[in-house]
Length: 390
Image (cartoon, rainbow, N blue to C red):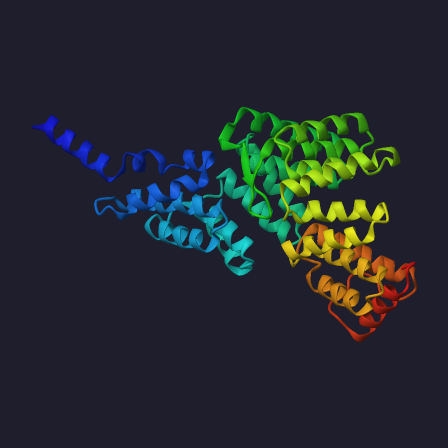
């Protein structure tokens, strides 16, 4: 009788969907994120799931939505999962990332703090706290949490990447290279599903590329250009992704005799990912260097169209507007850039560069970054957008 019942259960599960029990897993998310959505939905339609299993199905499906850029649906699944499993800090870690991508900063901060209160020894929680601190301008404290995460788990990929980046910013290149090399080893071994991650645009990327590029940046910044080029080449060889091609092109662009190679890389990058704002930006820079200004404007315009809050793209589109005498349009772009410039590190650098240009040209004298738009700043930007030397 017991054997007969077991066969009946097996038949019922098979009739529901033999894939449901197999494919609604985090392992499958790493292989093909979209593929878990249907089988997880089938599991959730069953009436005999325990709260724990139902929470896990919501969590897995949420990750599937998350990694396919369906962020609001991901948030709803994370909400349902956490309601059923309120001591699972891993759900909060994923949910907080959705909040960050949707710019729900108060919710983002609250969920990270809640995750840390639940389990302050979880390495993924620790590096998420570090990222939170970095995003709120507390880089030194962030560094401490990245290090704590690595102490608990030396294979924690995000912590290795974040700390390598911080070491590079501090010009501690030996330490930065060591962390990037450790990340490369982790990602090559596939430890902790470390092969892939979501970039800032929500695209699944290969962590091997991230590791190679981060190490290349440190080699380049420390003057070891031969090693930098080897890592740029290796990063491109891993799938010829737009970020890798754009990064190598940026490096090659420093050599007059290799600017054509850089342009070829950028053309391929944009062909591969026509809406990749960073690649479009680099293409615009390259084309402007060849004085192909109309094509450069088109590239910067496409970068801003793909990402309207792209500060670097807005500043360079403004400069191209100036090239063609469109002063009002140029000033509009600069005003938008000033309103957005503190949202990311590259945007902050671009805004600093803009203010330094205004000062150097004699149109602005106040130190630091402006706290907001003023009539004086409007006048300074307009003067700069009329002056081709600004």
